[in-house]
Amino acid sequence: MSTINSQPTAKFMSFGAGVQSVTQALLIAEGLLERPDAAIFSDTGWEPAAVYTTLDRVEEEIFKPLGIPLYRVNNGVIQEDVLDPNKMRGIPGFTASQPYEVTVVDRWAICPDEACGWRKLREIQEDAWSKDETPTLFDAVVYDLDGPDMAGLFEAIELVRSFPDLSDLDDLSRLITDEREEIMARSNIAVWDLGGPDEEEELAHAADLVVDALCRAEILGGLPAAHDACGSTGRIPAASHTEIRRDRGMLNRKCTQMYKLIPILEKVRRLLGGEAVEKFCRFCGGNGHRVAPWRAKRGETEVAECSVCHGEGVVVQVGPPPAGTWAEQWIGFSTDEIGRVSNRGDTRYSHSRYPLLELDMSRQQCIDYLAAHGWGDVAKSACLGCPFKSNAEWRRMRDTDPQAWAEVVAFDKAYRDAPGMTHQRFLHISRLPLDEAPIDARQPRELKQSTVADQVYAAELALAESGDPDGCSPWACRSGNAVDDVLQIQTRPAA
Image 1 (tube, rainbow, N blue to C red):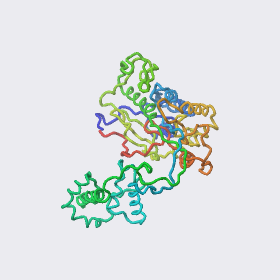
Image 2: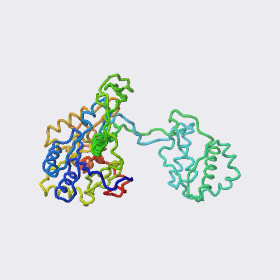
Image 3: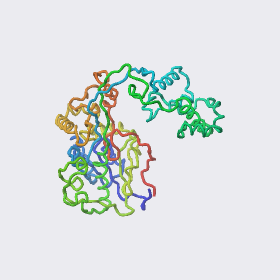
Image 4: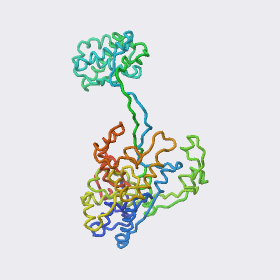
């Protein structure tokens, strides 16, 4: 991305009051990093008390003596907004449906009705595979009958979509030129391509059509008539059992963008000279209240404060800074967080820099550095109710901060059901209420596996116990997947 000036107009430090950002502040105080023009802390309104304590201490002991202003910005109070049905705000909570019973077939049997045409197809299938032979092209074409019109006849068979041996086609080669059109016309089939090596694609394609036509027109004679007894599958359950299941999922991660990145970038624009303009709120027509559109879709008519203008009837938008001005944005990723590095948060006026990566510092080195300088009690930066907390973090909160624990437990209960959602929401990965979740189980063997849900959770227990080592950053959510398009780190954007 090109800019008019190759040097930044200003340098701003993204300060989360966690391990890495406090380390950067101490490095500045020691003269190992240059002094930025300002630090920006984005407050979700639900940070741990230890984070606010660290924030105040850093401001008093480091930033003020160095003349570095600390700006505290926000975009609402996250725990209140998430529970407000008139605001479309969310956190990446774990979801689960209500328990439901399913029947699982343990063993199948051939349809007992000898007049069933689907039974015959099933017998052909099982006979071919009982010989434990490499499937032939003939087998592949027969199994391709699995589809919407066959009601899942061969759903248990992995379709063969390549040629084990093209010699299987030799005895059919004579049909490719002479009888292809006739057979296709008789069988009334569409083009079907198994694939195959590039150099033999044309031969394979022609042979597919011929064999498919032969199987359908000459051997099968079309699809059998519907058969209710076996559901037109050619088989019936011979043994089965029931299980209680719950569909599980996870909600989208919107909180980082909404409560961290947006307010920080707005402050950056202001500091660089962007003009703040008051505009008429088009969402509520300027009256400050409306029926939230997602509630209106459900037929609800309750009028509430507009979630865009917060009841003011107008919104303040900060425009872009003057052309050619841009800020160098310091982000505290350490070497073990290289997978979080991305340019997705960069804009025309804000470009990322990673001082800890330049110094080749890992998170553990940051922890050791803080301890050596009398800052060994710096907490991880993340909301109290962040669903990515590990069991160890949940236990620590429960055992050392009963007030915060009671607050989060109450939030978790209030968070359970949401209008318009069929699934319930949970803060803990076990999809159980937080005060009932097995946060004390450190090993799978400690967890009684009496249900499918227990078994699934046991498989996730290692993740639940250790959690994600990263804190929450405006530039990357906790426990996120490694960024695919990791770019070469540049301390300056190209001129």
